Image (cartoon, rainbow, N blue to C red; front, side, top):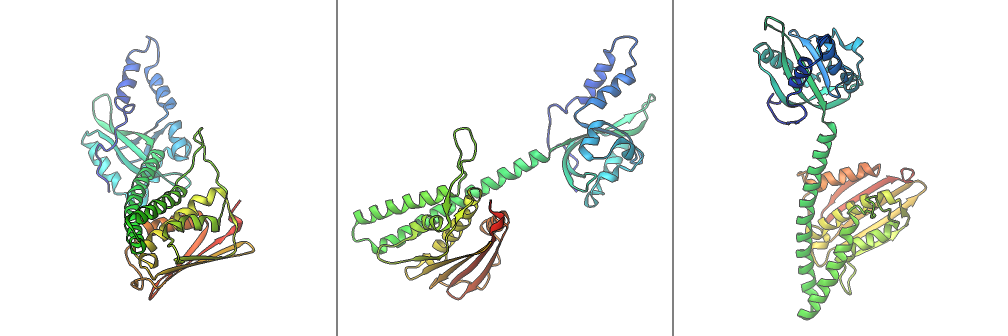
Length: 355
């Protein structure tokens, strides 16, 4: 259970009840203060709920209906555990215990359940409700949906990890390219020219894995065939006078929305081959065969004469998670087989998923 402490401050949450009380005090004589306060609560954009000390919902505003999906007629009178996922039910006794002790629980992030069963990330503030004699008779809750903010934070974390992964990959690939190029260089000038060409090719391949935007921040669609994409990505690993990789089979135009996904996958596979697999040694070779039949694409990535691999790596790193994510995005499947001298990978995609 997460700690019920201040983890996420919202300036517009602070003093919410103080503002409401001030509004009531400043109401013109003759106004019904209770009705005035009830109107403010009802019109709030935040879900405001009250409950008894036994956890029974007693009031439920319109924002609570929007956030959780239950109309007031279905929520009032029900235990508040109606909203709590099974794995977080231990939060409620702790909350009620602190409320009975007169404690105000500041914003804490948790998860609650919508009527349709989906889970919602929310921020909660919970305060005791006292009667005229000062006795605590219940609790009021202010809940705010932070799902979008949580998704944005997770997306940012993924991007940062991907950036870190890419930078490490680029350094490792550059080192591998230097090693390979040095074996065939006849002079320092030839080595410099060869490296310059390879790094330009690597830059072009790397660009393909990045989203492309137009001036108005809209995605710019790319048109490219599968074999063109593979050739561009593998170009940095070519060697003069020796074929390190070969492409054969059918070709087809990749849907614009899927170019980045295919590029990410092939760039990751080529990077790993250059760091650990067949492209990391001078006698290694990569063969790629593409077969398009009807509405199905089958691609076979076969590394030969590599340095040798363990039967099945057990570590699930960022690269593996990236492959899984890309495969789902393409509505495809990836099968791996670790052969004595390298990786054999098969990608299957249903082309009817392409526009």
